[in-house]
Every structure is written in structure tokens, then in C-alpha cells.
Image (cartoon, rainbow, N blue to C red; front, side, top):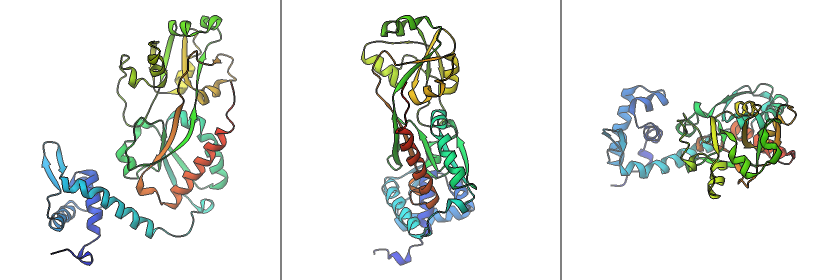
Amino acid sequence: MPVKINRVDLNLLVYLDALLRERNVTQAAHQLNLSQPAMSNGLRRLRELFDDPLLVRTSDGMTPTARALELQPVVREVLSKIDQAVQPRGEFKPEDASQVFRIMASDYAEATLFPSVLGKLRTLGPGLTLDIMTPSDVSFLDVERGKVDMVINRFDAMPQSFHQILLWQDSFTCVLSPEHPVLADFTLATYLKADHVWVSKTGMGVGVGVNPGDVQRLGWVDAALDKLGKKRQIRVFTRHYQAAMTLAEQNDLIVTLPSRAAQLKRDNPRVVLRDPPLDIPPLELKMAWSPLLQHNPANRWLRKLIVDTARELDGQAAPL
């Protein structure tokens, strides 16, 4: 006999969404501020409703069944539409608001984009606060749950459920000491003979050690060299652009990094900027956010502010 929708407790869909995200009854209960017995009872009712175990205990923990995986995107879409329907119709008023926006951003984005964003926030929303987190502070699951408002970085891969937008593309620039001997004849051959600093922090999550032989995971510069059948001598690996640019002041190292970051050092007499002696495809800085926050008025307002600011800065890119 078909189940009538008016007999379905819609709270069960909220429980199911949390259970499938957490894959743990206790954690799902904590997420929804429920007791563990209440969540266990909810799972029992869900199993009766769908006539399926939904989550099965295995050596890997609670594993969703095929039926549960089929239901997950449907349930998420339903809850998203309900959330959109019950959101206040009034627009977000930043001048009257007092809240914290949590944003994960690489130090590249923090140094090149956020000074302008913060300048606008201080005028438009004096009661607003930014909590800028590092990529290592945040996981994809945190974003999916809406624990952070948005993430801004370069991403090799992104869950399909996330919303995302390109903020800008950036070229690459070499930063090195004016006393570096390579400047007398800055060619690809001399570039390859020099020692280099590698700098990157793509995506999010806790990083792992770099394998110098894994060219595909080293990023744009080394992938471009690999296409030429070349390889540079990397002596220092770092995930921090500011640290890399400081290392460039030494007279025997070359740092090749995004041009917008390099421009921050253009007035520093201890370094010079040069175009790389090879073609490197531009990197893409993107902003992504959870579908749970897609229709949130405050989040939507801040996303627009960031996009508008990025577009303005993109049109003001300073030449070398």
C-alpha cells in the first residue's frame, strides 16, 4: 500500500540527511542536538518507512545501503527547497547585522583579495566579523555541513553538490634576489640549473608530505616543465606564499608563484620580479559553498560582495 505523504513526519528526512552525512548515530544526534536514543528511534522509524536497513554496520563503520545512496540526493534537494521556502523574504541588511562569517582561504587569497573585501565590510557592515581559516582547518565535510560560509582557494577537485564560481585567473611570476647570478642570463637553461622554492596549498584538509617525483601533484609550474621534458631542482617545499617570498631574498633561490602574490613584493628592494622563461597555464582561484547555504540571505550577500570585489581587482591587475 502506498505511503501517504501526510503520514510522513518530515523531521525524519532531516534525521536521514544527518545520518547519511555522518554515518554515525551518535554524531548525527549531536549534529541535530538530539539524544542518542532519539536518533536511534528515528533510524528505526526510517527503516520502517523505507522498508530498508539504510545503514548497516560493517568493518568500516555504518555503511549506507544502495537504497540509502539513492535517497541521499533526493532528500538533500527536498530539504534545500524547504529551507529556501522558509527563509525570510526580507533582504540581508549588513548595516544592522552583527555576525561572524567563517571563510576558509589560502594565504594567497587572504593576501591578495581580502584586504579589499575587509575594506568594504568595514564600511557596509561595521558589525560584521571575518574568521579566516586555513585550508588545513577545514574538510570537505565541514563545507557540506555548512560549518563554514565559503572556501576560497585553487581546487583540483570539488564535490558535485557544491556550488562554485571562478573569481579570477592568475599568471605566474618569478621572484628572486637582485644578486642572483641567474639574472645575467635568465633563460630556461639557467632557470633549470638554479635551486627553487616550491609553494602551493591546493584544496583543503590536512596536508601530507610532498613526493618530489610525483610531477602531476606538484602543480602548474612542474606540470608545464614536464610537458617540455624538463624538471627543476626544488630545494624547499612550503605551503605558505609569504614564507616563499621571504626565501626569495636569498641570492641562490628562485620562487615561481602567482603574479598577484608576487606583486605584493614589487616595492621590496631585496627582490626583483621576472617573467618565467616558459609558458605556464594560468591558475584559477575559485569560491565554493554548501548547497545548504545557497539561499541564505547573509551568505548570498557576502558571496556577491566577494565576487564583485574580485572582478574589480581583476580589472586593476598591475603589470610587471
